[in-house]
Structures are given as C-alpha cells and as structure tokens.
Image 1 (cartoon, rainbow, N blue to C red):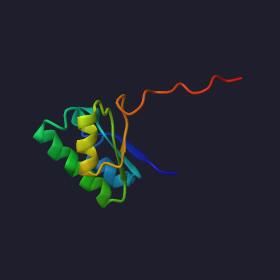
Image 2 (image 1 turned 180 degrees about the horizontal axis):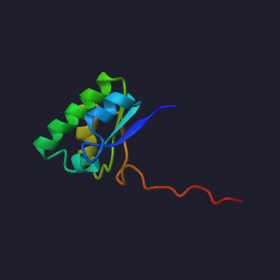
Image 3 (image 1 turned 90 degrees about the vertical axis):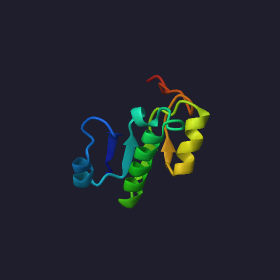
Image 4 (image 1 turned 180 degrees about the vertical axis):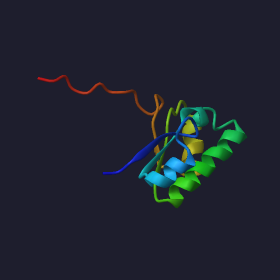
Length: 97
C-alpha cells in the first residue's frame, strides 16, 4: 500500500503530515498550479514542493493543469505527472453489467 498527500500547498496537507506519512505521491494543489507559467511566486512554491517530493522519493502530481503553457512549465520544473482538463477529461468508466 502507498499513500498520496492531496492538495499540497493548501488546507491540511502540511509538512507534518508529509513527514509522518512518508507518501509515495504529493499532489500539488490546483491553486498553485493555475497560472504557474506567469506567477513567479507560485512557480517558486511549486519548485519547492517538487524538490521536497523528490527528496523523499515521492512522485509529484500537478492538479488542475489547464493549458499548454502550464504543462510546459511544469514539465521543465520536473513534475512527474499531471492531471487536468487540458490533459484529459474525466472518464466515468464502464457501466456495470
């Protein structure tokens, strides 16, 4: 079993939670991902989260990727995975038989 810490950078996803759980994944909150390509403050924060994640051997996921510019900046910074409408729409899956 592995853990993921959701909404890193917002809410209850504090550093103490990350230290206690030692998660396999850190999911960067959409509030930091949006406009990361034009906002130097959030870009610095995202870089710090990526550094933290990779330092504890966790994969880093960017939530809410909304356009190609954000995608390119996040890739260049070293984000492992992305999630958002720009990349793919949610899939309801198959209907049960």
